[in-house]
Image (cartoon, rainbow, N blue to C red; front, side, top):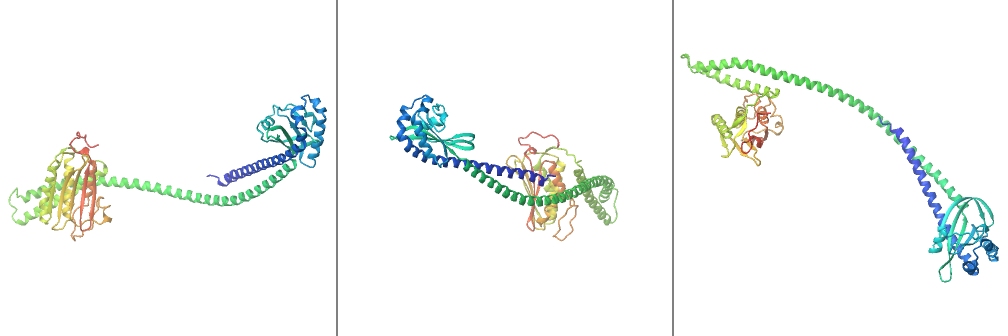
Length: 495
């Protein structure tokens, strides 16, 4: 199981620590950038004061007369005068060192005399300031540093390169002011320290609150996981029992089908004999029976035997379908002739109960590839059902049509009692019969529709049912274009 609490403790702790460090670093960098900008502005102001005090007197010396020799520069009285003025100007300020550069990079003056005469033409900050007239800054830590009033140690220094503008506004030289920012950096460091403490405290509190929430969530998840594990175990057990029950049911159903098939075969043999004897007696093939009652009884035996044989045949067919043993003997079938023949067989029965039977078949109905015996069985079953559940004065229609694409549609529609919506799903199951609202006992096994549906599907078709109570029922058969023999080649035997 996923260890939520351990994962949260580790990952969120690292994430909060990383965020605190990033925020602290960003704050420190922004604070130092602001400090450098502030010192630059201060130095710009001071450079104007230096320019007024020094440049107005020594501009010609710096730009024109200053020698390039280091020792000569140091020995010039102008150097001493500039130094004295500079010391007076920086007294009490944060500026600890001053340099003056000529435009060619020569260090004309430095409060650290060892720097006088140095060539700074290679210094990009000095040359950029001289060329563009824009200030430049450097910030860093110096372990040792020679200031205007003596040596310094462990100092944060901000170097500002500031252009010296002449009366015409052109850049004539460069001031470099070194400002001691140690105290300000210490203040920033102190602010960063307190910010870090605040962030650690805030994030620590947030971490604690989230830890409590996650710990509670972890307990709930563990409990739910345990419950789910138990439930899954129960479901697996139930599914195993269900699979076993399904296997038992399939075995029982197979045994039932085998028993029905066996019994049907066993019953048909003596039944055929009974029907044959009854037919012989009813036709008085071996002489007069004497009393007409005997002939009537013989006819009754013959009719009942035929009816019973039909029921047995239906049971046997259903058993074959369920067992997957139904064999199809396919051939080219004149479907129009077959439908007319079936209608003719049922017409007398329909006329006796005052039901009109109509047949509507297009002249161009193509031949059909299928099992003629099974197709006839489908049509007779559907017509028989329609007659059985249509009251006197009703109408039954058998029609066929070719659909777009070459598919075949056959429908048996009646104006009978109809079927309740709740019964439509089960009426196609074997042995199911709807409630007879015509108030008479309906003969049959309830296998007709189920068997017709199975036989239709064996031909690659579908059987659908539409019905409204007291309006009527329409059973529709749809067969694919491959079954018609218009443009398609003959199919092989049913797969």
